[in-house]
Image (cartoon, rainbow, N blue to C red; front, side, top):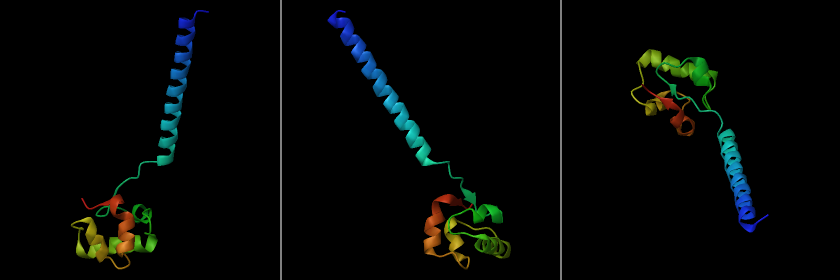
Length: 101
């Protein structure tokens, strides 16, 4: 086999290997990122939806809904800290996962 053809075959094999490594790396990164996290609207969410947030169990979810019923819609996400039991630590955990539309 002449040297030119052999070099082309080696180059093609190396390129295929590089592409397959990139594809498998992208697939692994996609699997690690997990599913997209849905943003919860604190003005309309149910107990079940609110309880799905980190640090918010059923009782805090019910407290959020009770607060919303008594005082009306939340103006912004920071207002959720007015609910008894929702402190700065809990708020920091859910800040990026809630909205007040």
